[in-house]
Image 1: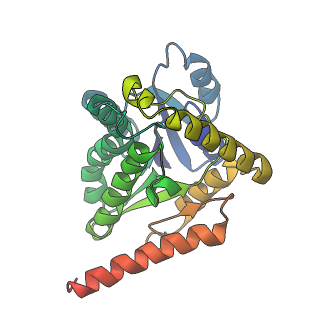
Image 2 (image 1 turned 60 degrees about the vertical axis):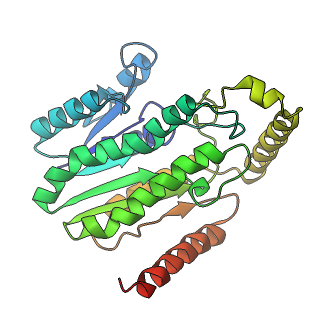
Amino acid sequence: MKTILITGASSGFGKLLTQQLAQKEQYHIVATMRNTDSSNATVKKELEALPNVEVLSLDVTSDEEVQHVTQKVAQKYSSIDILINNAGVFGGGLLEAHSITQVQKLFDVNVYAPLRLMKAVLPSMRQQQDGLIINLSSMLGFFSIPLNAVYCASKFALEALVSGSYSELISKGVENILVEPGSFPTALYQKSGIKADLSDVTLSYDGWAEQMTAYANQAVYKAIQENQPDPQAVVQKIIDLISMEKGTRPMRNPIDQISGEDFAQKVAHDIESLAQTQMKAYGF
């Protein structure tokens, strides 16, 4: 049986994915989340009632906890075969209205946390010459939009980490890939997130930020209501990727039921084509 470690499994894609994978007998699933003894105690109990599921407490921003949990899992199950970097946090607000501390907090969850997990599992995966890492990015890792520049920057960074390391790792038998959802009705948008915290700067824009935020929220809500994007589609894409043979998995896997799948795939294809053209120009 292969062992799958999932971060951010208390809600959204992570919880759905745990529930779906538990129906498959060939996996040990280690679902991780924070606050298993407090706010997430109920969901911990719910998930642990499923077959082949173990729930562990993990703060992905802690080097010590990441090392402790990954070592514990590897010792118990012999290896971590698949890592799903799902934990993430949303943000919003004017670029100028983010303190550097707030930007660092958001990057710690969306960029450094997946990197921590990658570095924790890669030595054993390379030794086995086998492994799969799936990173939950976003269509906002392709575009940056007003009032989301910091969040988009974190997803741009994750895209760069994965795309740049793909060739490094595939030569060692490890696939490091991306899944890039558009807007889906998950708890990510309902949580407080790590947002602009310099209220005096926001106020100095004379109401523009508040007006744009209200307009954007209304537009996204309307698009979701009209298109009814189903989070299960993202979960199924991840499950399909897990089931594919090594070497056949695309590095980028966008899924956007609002803008449309043709649009999402074209964006990913164009970005990859431009990257390949530049690499050839430099003789790679």
